[in-house]
Length: 121
Image (cartoon, rainbow, N blue to C red):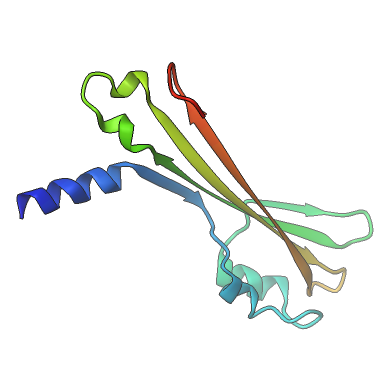
């Protein structure tokens, strides 16, 4: 039992996420020219970024990232010397027309390996 608790604590300490993860299932609710920006906010919450374009349309941006420490980070004494992490990103951009309805979406992903001292990214 004690080993299970320690393993769980290590696993939870090794990652951190932030932002709003927009899933394909959530995007499936949006119908072009029908779903309003208010309905999108009700489902996803406030966007990370928002801009209004010259033509009166707007863009809602939802960013999400998750950083995971590598297993070698937990090695006593030398762990800090070979420490590293990996960050996954997902950015979702939702396009809103001048009439205030959903027009479409684009998504971009990224992966950022990071190392310290002797750790290779």
